[in-house]
Every structure is written in C-alpha cells, then in structure tokens.
Length: 426
Image (cartoon, rainbow, N blue to C red; front, top):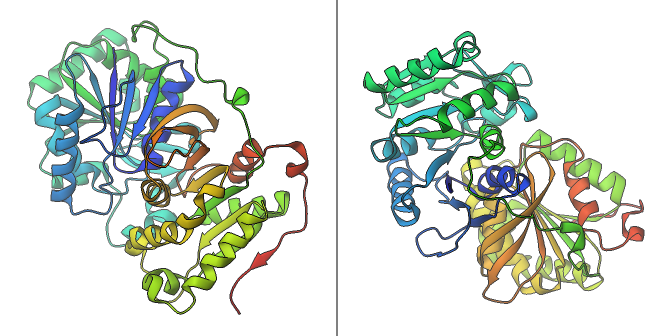
C-alpha cells in the first residue's frame, strides 16, 4: 500500500510525511506536483495553496491529485492543526473523488486536541491563541462550520463513541457514509484515540480519505501489515558533514518562533541579521539592498553560522508573507552555494528558498523532534547537496531551532556557546 499526501505548504508536507519515514517507509516531498515524477512509498505534495483564494486552492489541489494518484493508493489530505489556509475548500473538492472525508486534525504530541469539533491548543481554545488572532481574528475556529460553508454535509464522532466497541463503531461509520454524509469530524485527545481511528478506517472497504495533521499520519504509518514492505531509513548520522556554515532562515513572527530564536542565540552564539520588511518590499530598488546582500555574504564567507530573520514594522501585513519570503530568498541566493546546512522556519520561507535555488524535491531522513524534519535534496538544478531542516513557524518546543542547529553542526567545537552578535542597519 502506498500513500499520497497533499499538503498546502512545504513544512506541513514534511511534517506529515516524516512520520512515515520514522516507520521505515521511503518518503519524498515534492514542490512541483504537476511535473515531478518522483517515486516513493509515501509521496507528499506541497501545492502551495495556503495564500490562494478558496476556489484557486481547490482547483490546484484537485490537479495535484489527478496528476499523482495511482490505483490502490490511499489519500491523506494534510491540514494545519490550527486550521489555517483553505483546507475546507480543498477537502470539499477532493471528496467526490475520494469518498468519505475522515476529519481529525488533532496532534496530541504538540498539544493540539479536538473536543466537540473545536480545536484546543495546550488546553486553550484555538481562538484565544496568537496564531489564530494573527490571521483569523474575525472568524471562529469551528471545524464543522468551515466544512458546511465549503458545501459539505457533516456528522460528528465524539470521544465516547470513538472509545467504544470496535465492530459497532465500524458499522456506525459505514452507516454515516451510506446516509450521504460527506465529512465525519472525529474528536481526539490522545495518541491512542488517533490510533483507534487509524486502525478502524484503514481496514474499512468504504471509500474514504483522511484529513489531519501529522498526528493521525503517525498512527497510520505504524499500523502493522498496512504497507507491503518497510526499508531501512537513511542513517542521518552517517551522512558526510562539512565545515560550511549553517543558515537559519526565519520568516515566522509567532511567539513560539520568537522564543526558539532567543534560545538558539543564547545557547549557540550564532550571528543574527534582521532584515527590515521595507527592504524586502522594494527589493533591488531599495537603497540598502546591496548592503544587506553584502552583509549576508560576509557572514557566510567567514564560515559563521547565521540566523537571518524577517523583521516587523508598523506596515506589516501577515498576508504579505509570500512576497517577503520570496525576496529574502532572492537576497540570499547569490551566496547560497556557501551554505552547508539550511534550517527554514515557516513553509513559505522554506519553499521560497528551495525553489529559488532550484531544489524541487526532498527525501526525508529523520525527525529531530516532533514536526521538525531533516531531509536532503533528491535533485537540484545547481547540484546543491546539503542537509535541510524544515519546521512550521508556530510549532515545536522552545529548543527546536537549537536542536536542529546542533544536528547540523559539523564538529563539537561549533556547538560550544559563544558571545551572540546581533547586527542591523543603523
């Protein structure tokens, strides 16, 4: 059995597929689903639809499905555990092609749970979090309402029912599908809840597909006998390292990411450059563009690991993230060949950098911590062969960036704390 994962951003595709890598399955992430001919047991496609209109996102998602889906393959629609993006429109577009939508966005390992069809983050309603307020302050975080608005008929499966007897539960889900319901919303508080759902739905003959974050994907990956064969995963520790510097690109402005950056600087002493948004908005036309490009080059020429971040000003709009990330990648591109390892926080940031330097697919090798994936390019138009870590912005422990940096450090002496240098234009 093979799996096709369709995700709306790069870090999400990697985060979801890495669970299958951990289970011994060959997993590849493609940034070009309409043209990439990559073969793997688990193929995760980044459709890059999070910032599109719902109609555009739905159209691109269906196009990716039709281009990549093969007979006998199971579909997993990866969605953000905090419900960002056009996920409901994408699910609605896929449903006529794939059957009953089993909607379970919970990711208990990262504090995301679903109760009564509502998302909670570390026990707090999603609506109260900075992540939600930044982009969705004017609408409720209601899974059912989003699906209904996208045109789907829904039903809910609560925890008591999920934790009940297996055979009646399977019969119940079949009846739900036969009744004409198009999406079944499943509550989950623990990994065992998701494992129960995975076991049950994987064995059903009813046409269905999964909609979830990395949480449900991990439980499906670990099902015995669900996949034809498992392979030895890439030994990340055996990969030849070099002394070239590590570049840490940060496009996210979440509070989680702020704490991760602060701890990285405190423990590692990496140099930091914070690029003003105005420089990125104007690009090469900005008077200081060449100065910023030179500063980046100076840091990497000196083999100094560099934390490069997008700043924030009063004109900042969260919807300009793609533009800012794209221009940050353009700023870095002349010096990218000097980089020995890349850590990219935020799917838009990672995608912008990789596509700018001609990397369009990644083979996943290991998970540094939950949701923090390590990969290598499958192919690169410019021959880049570096290790790459991707992570969603509002994701991971406070140590996530530091753990990723430690892993990419080429020798022990580079892991010793040293004095932090923060640089910027006066």
